Amino acid sequence: MSRRRTVRLRLTLLYTGLFLTAGVVLVALIYLLVEHSPFPGPPPAPAPPGGARLPLPPLPFEERQAETLRRLLVNSLIALVVMAVAAVALGWYTAGRVLRPLGEMTATVRRITADRLDRRLAATGPDDELKELADTFDELLDRLEGPSPRSGASSPTPRTSCAPR
View 1 (tube, rainbow, N blue to C red):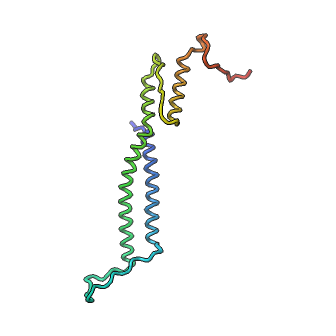
View 2: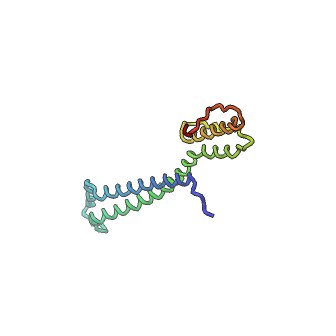
View 3: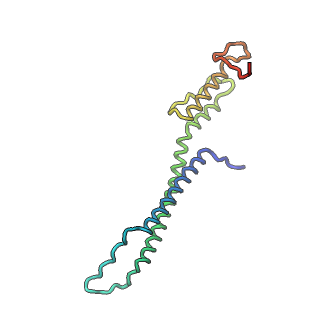
């Protein structure tokens, strides 16, 4: 049995994909800016007093820069993985919040039966696509509950025909 890809899952994957794309571009941009920075590197450390020799000779600038870039890249990728996990969790939570009214509408519609057409969704909240869907469903129920054209009663809404005259 295949698992259904819900809207919540698709929204979560979309949010995560967008976040990861932006994150990869950010990591690459930071890496390129640091690698090709027009600003000079830090000056070499001063020699210790008394002319004592250091136990290890300092690395050449190019090797230090390569090591710094490698550490920057590894740390940036670790941060990106942590943020990807956060993006999945926040995307799942946000998608659930956005879709909650749809779940409530679905539950109400399931409680409406042929014998109980008097129930309505009566959606509240912002005037968005979900409220428009609920209002359209309520209007449909009003038409179904009203007098039927076949029963001989007059309909509250005049009916028009699309047939040519």
